[in-house]
Length: 446
Image 1 (tube, rainbow, N blue to C red):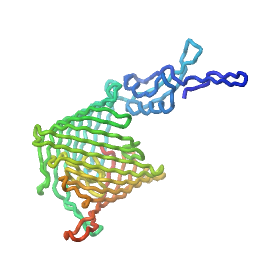
Image 2 (cartoon, rainbow, N blue to C red; image 1 turned 180 degrees about the horizontal axis):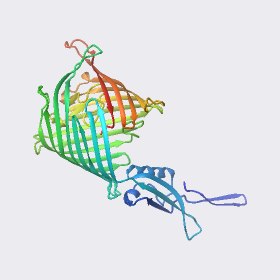
Image 3 (cartoon, rainbow, N blue to C red; image 1 turned 180 degrees about the vertical axis):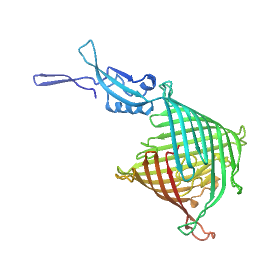
Image 4 (tube, rainbow, N blue to C red; image 1 turned 30 degrees about the horizontal axis):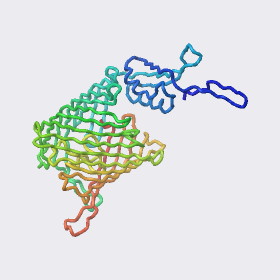
């Protein structure tokens, strides 16, 4: 607070104390380099000269300025300004050190499904001093490759509107499995089904508005070519296509997590609806509705409970490139389901829930580490009339996660099980197990 003692007098039995208003007469902004324009700076400062300065507003302003990604250092101080009157004038001074606008990033990742993957990312993260971003990245691996050229404006001027556009290319190959369950806990290896490939390229543009600090509501349009093909001689169970499609969508997101990778508190909610009208190569209307919610509950300073749930509904004849995928630790292609391999469950409709308990001890195991326990339940279905809670698959797992200098390292052992009926429907369901799945990954998922 800038409230200070202005005068103190004693008159008879009365003590008179006069305080300053606590207001700043002016706000000064100083940059080490005149890289960022004033508009994105002043819109993030939550203080003005008409109200008394409060610590909470000062802290929020500093956090907001760091959040733009344009500054490596933000400092705030109060100083005295010269005045013709006897009254002292207080000035708030923001000192800002700009980051280099042009950034080159190199990344590497390894996991049990995609093997080694490499990333090259180059962009200008402060285009014209607006804190907007322009650039592209390339990701290459044995089973997938991606490229994207993007332009992002987090906030347009002093408004809360946001804009995003990208040209993209995405190609991947994956294998399906015929899941089997056994009464024996050791289970047996599920048979490999067919191998497929999906290639997508096109352009996406989105326009929307930010809702307070953590919310976002956008409308988007995507024009793409989506090609799916069978990459093996085995008989495929999914239809393959080569379609040019125009899709319209809207999305609502709220993210208050303190860390998107290893959150210890906060929540995440995402709702999305998309529709593809019967134009270009689409011979009918495709639609899709999906939602995800994640709740992170700190039980103590070292223990966090995470509850999550997701659902997806869509039309009955979605192309293979647009279906829902479940299985694995979760990534861009396949949603998290501990106990199954990536892409084990594929369908037009899906529902899943999960529980994760994470404990981070005070000691290190080579690197800072966390112990994790997982539980998952859900399934995917082709048609909505097939949705049944009687055939939900469940999964359990236990693992370790290390925070290494080159990114997180994860090691998890898991197993799926289900209560499946005997062939004779008159008998009750029995507990059956699938094979044991081992996950390992090193590096950030990009």
